[in-house]
Length: 376
Image 1 (cartoon, one colour):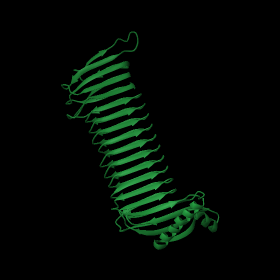
Image 2 (image 1 turned 120 degrees about the vertical axis):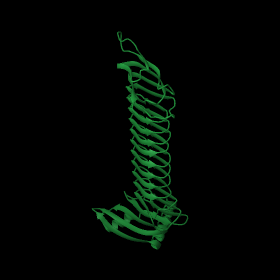
Image 3 (image 1 turned 90 degrees about the vertical axis):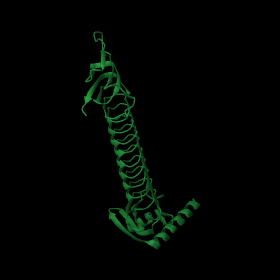
Image 4 (image 1 turned 30 degrees about the vertical axis):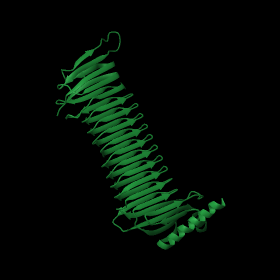
């Protein structure tokens, strides 16, 4: 304990020394019993910026500037100014500069106190690392890479021209425009990514994933839905039970849901889509990059839209039809329907559409299948 107090005292003294050289301080009552000690200051610009807090929000804004400007707000609750100052003595922060411009806060021992950071940094900073154990993280307009983590708060990042790596224990993650790769993970929140010039890897314990544009994607959620506007390459999307909608997919697609509907297309490459329960709607696109594919659901109908100039070979099966079994706009598809005199019918179909091509296997254990001609 004595050693811990000595280290804390040294840490506090170092923080005061750094603050005294570059900062100004004021203490004021915000509302009710909340008191805020506000410290403002500057640091020389560095290649890297690191901000770390044991409790509190972090906000970083990049701009055309030659130094790092910061505002630190220490929040405590107390009935008087003297009591507030006693509570503030349990909050520590320090700043340092060199190859790394660093701001750090510790709130150990405080009765509900926390420290927020608001930082103005040069936009050309090569690497920004932001970490808080309990607060939101926000950053905008950074030319380099950005790493962000929070124990449970939300993350909002936009106009990051390098890559992003971000994680939250359970909050939502909101990403705007990114000039590189994006790797994000949350324990249970929603994820929204507008666009990324590189690959996207997004995982949530149970939230929804809403993705705009990206090169290559790997998307997983424990139970939420997944929507994608455009993927220029390969995509893998899986959910434990939500629905999946992939709109414009230029590469091969691997899609799986434990119990939700799947809607994909236009699909330029091959597709393997499977759901435990729900319908599948697949729209195939024109071109010669389509490869062997498979669509399968345990319970649900399957609808496939095929362009008039796309050659594909069909093999389809319905184990237990719930109505018409299999229908087709293509006369070259040979359909065999079982008799329904003694129970539910089976149905099979096989044929080469538009001269034939890669194999498309379509199967539902209980439902119907329809092949429709898609106008070019």
